[in-house]
Length: 176
Image (cartoon, rainbow, N blue to C red):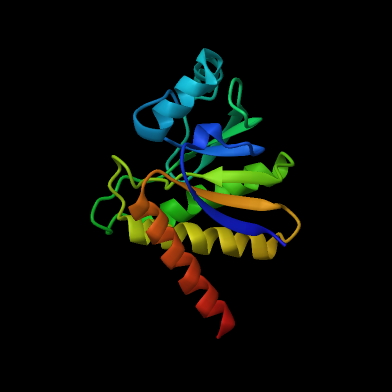
């Protein structure tokens, strides 16, 4: 049974098999968690991402973790929030699914996600948390032996609370 967990902290410090990067389409680093992961992993990460040719929104690519405790970095490109009328929810769910699929294909047993698209991309935290939780739960239910742990790693208390509410809501719905 896969454990779903929430933590508040620095995703670059987590001792898991893979961390997910809230990447941009270029995969060449940026601000927020993307910049933090690139800094912590070291220059080899940028060298490797340069060979990938970018990544469309809603998809993911995988690289080595280099100087990170995690063996892998999965670069998931979430959408920029445009008010909800530009397929943002489906694209965000797709980014999570692609990341989980890559992780499973590479034998990842533990994985940590940031709150993809909720920083400078402006996706509302509550909606993003619900999409993240629902997408991860659906994936682990259909792939029950893929993961031991999935962590939602939050940068701030608002993110933690949004994910806690999403997990409680999902649990209530599964009971009924």
